[in-house]
Length: 260
Image 1: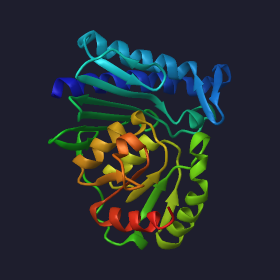
Image 2: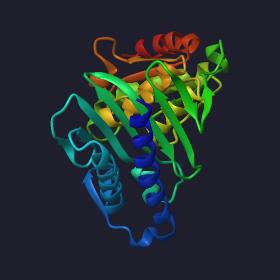
Image 3: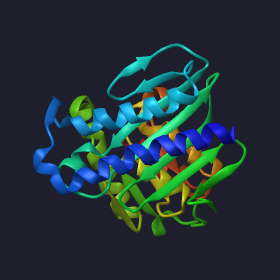
């Protein structure tokens, strides 16, 4: 499994560092709007190809599920890839975006990598082996009280605007009952920050598999909990996510679900 993680790390670093080099020449980056408030650049596409090429050199028979290319191939080894999580941040020069790569083998997440090219921080996890940042073991925070917790979130937009009537009361409740709320704009990094103890909880509606796959394994291996917010589905399938430390997850979920 270590060899598979090494491949994912190499792919993430290549893609992330290539993306970061474009920050100084954003005026030359071509931006297309796939849907309202949903952007793609040639940087997203090029980064994704770098990831695919890097992995395929070593594992030509593996399959991919990618944000830009969709499903590629069929295999019990499935790489789930978001080459640039936080594209809107990137095209505005806001330095909070990441590369997210996870490997599922026979429907179990086995390997996870989230790379922040701006801070050059590398979050990694293997099933049963714990989670790390830059080679150092990480655990979720030991915070016990919701009112002392720092919570991350993402705003509902595009098709997820239908959740706005529930989301705004949720946001108000979380602001009133915690130490603060942050919305940096890269769900993958938000989840990695829970694993590293920098955030105590997180919630968002309508995330895609490539947004949450790597972060899910990181949180689980760091001792945290991630579940479906609406209570009836696997969060990997519904995309409606609430995550946190063992002491924060349940009270945060109760606070949120009363508004559903």
